[in-house]
Length: 106
Image 1 (cartoon, rainbow, N blue to C red):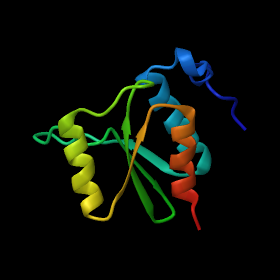
Image 2: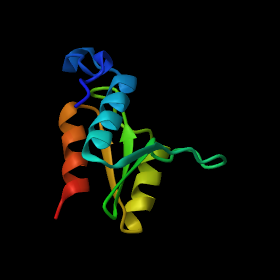
Image 3: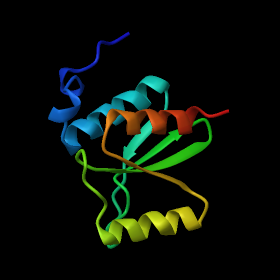
């Protein structure tokens, strides 16, 4: 097993959005899933990542600890949820675990 990269060993208080994104990608990779950066030219506010594992799809909006999504991001999140999609706002290691749990749910 590959040791975790140093960039994901930050204490919770040291983590910024980039560190959380790296830790999310590492966690989903470790699970055996895909964690792709989501880019949608012409559509502002789409979630940062789309995570896929065994037929499950979770959209993830990443935030620095304690930060909240902007109004346009909240709108996009609601649009996805209205279409039955799972969307998580992640600003901590606990949020990363929630995404892993959602992906690996029976």
